[in-house]
Image 1: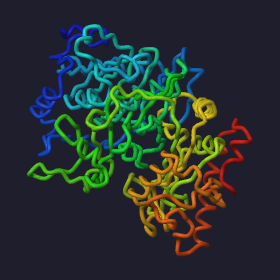
Image 2 (image 1 turned 45 degrees about the vertical axis):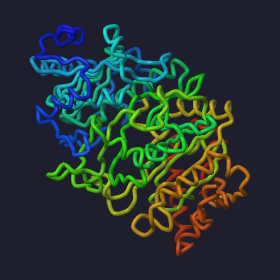
Image 3 (image 1 turned 180 degrees about the horizontal axis):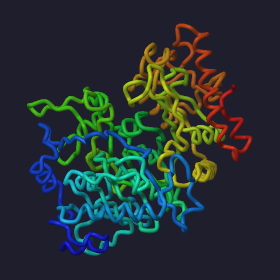
Image 4 (image 1 turned 30 degrees about the vertical axis):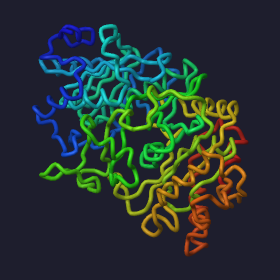
Length: 524
């Protein structure tokens, strides 16, 4: 395709335009331009500069008549005026004139009935490689027929001007539904592309009766589907990559009238402290074509996954078919199990507990995890409770209750078993207790998903009121007793009541929730 193909996107005089290159070509361009370097094992290692994670404070939605009434405006969905967007759009496009560009035509959605054609235009070859690996890849024979419904333009060299463009900094991630365009400026962090498309799908899919979810999914030997909801660092990718179950996807899915389907064609795994022993499937995905963001590498090109010298948020982007037993395309049936993952740094939540449908709705709306020092700038020495509605508030254009209602209806209709799993600390808070054993968590999930816990006697947690199994195959009984693992039972009780109070305080914002769901929360 000629360079004139970009005129429809307002780019009339680019430099050389590279259309739909394959991984080897993109890696060559990236190395030639000194965008990254090959590791000994084959992945392309890149640095994202100042921004080593998403910048939610710099994300905006353009205020437009067609969508204004349905957007949940506020700190998450910050409005940008049409006038500011026009100025930003004009200056942004002017900045890429004369520049060499890379174009990746892709799809969002593994189910052909719900696929969204997208186009990603980037200044850097490695950003194009990232898009090619993360989104659903287009059949080369159909590339000429591809008509994008949304276009992402990624120009990290362009720095937004807050005074002229209405932004908060030089970085800007701006979505216009009217223009069907996303502009990404001032940051090189590739995850902004992925989550911009997720935000688009979170708005559009409900109009087609598809429930969009921030979760991973896998399928058991008997065809049973499990969903794993959780915020970053809670184990969505690690726990769904299970050799005994087939992977549908690791992060974003839709739940239609037919079942579950992956929104993506790749995985975006945190790889800090990645090990072959604990995460063999992800370890084996570290090969040629994989993009590694901010992973430390020595002069011999050997990778150091334990190093957080650049950031704790080191990432690997690779196609889902790098996972040996992945389902291609990522389409499966209706879920039998929903698992809410939380990394509780206060050390009080049980390792696993069964939830009633009302408790499941409460925890879905709460979206709890806890962050600790070292994972984000500005965190103090004590754990920080984080509540993110629907386990994905930064990506939800509509009100949280809108999505919760979709989940609740599906849980009831399909009789789904719901579980709360703590992948965080036990025996005490962060700094005193220890991180929950990954083999124990895997054993607990295996038992839950296989039905082995269905007839096991349970005890109701005195504060969180979920039902905790008294035993589980391959897990010592004492591991299941969160309170018993603390050396000071009274200190545990205080910590549990404190966390319960944080849940209750956060839940005050959900004024339209039924009394049944409100009463399903922890005892305060």
